[in-house]
Image 1 (cartoon, rainbow, N blue to C red):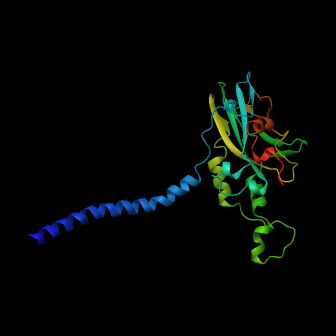
Image 2 (tube, one colour):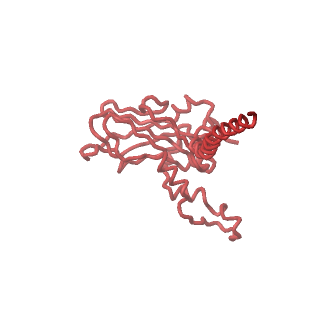
Image 3 (tube, rainbow, N blue to C red):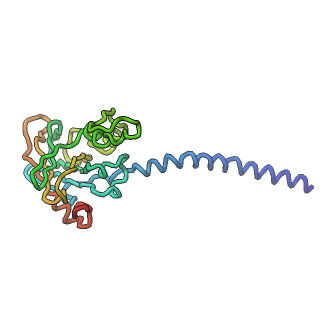
Length: 237
């Protein structure tokens, strides 16, 4: 009798243990993916541009543009590469179109203008690649140290960041908001780089091409006022 009871308990234990083991194995397999997803969660969903600290609104055109820089790697940990540490400033540009006509960004120019009037266009993927992967990246390959840039294919992490966090479209639909990150090469600018600086946006057209919007000027001083403890509020030592 005891023998039969022991066998029954053993079978029940095995019956319970099998699905538990499968569930545990599945959970362990999914865990790394979950961690990776958390690492690259991304910024919060963009709200209307006039809800940000630094924006410029054109009431007659029913369009607003905001600029939200990230000068602290801890504030934008979703990027796959250390852009900020290499002198590249990520700026999230938010465009809200409250008009009844779609807008085109195909010809738009979005420039970082420093307090000293340095006009810096948004960096291309090639520009970013050159900044991050120069001769210093190849010092371990026994290449003679000479003052040239080693030309690499664009690193896939740069492309992945652009695909995930850049602008998904060049069209801003009516009554919608479009946002994306651009990068600006601020290395060598006088510090603090955001003080007195602006984001200047021009050549936005209606999608049908019949009208060009007036230029937008977004003052980064507004952002600094709202973020007094940000690294850009002080000169680095």
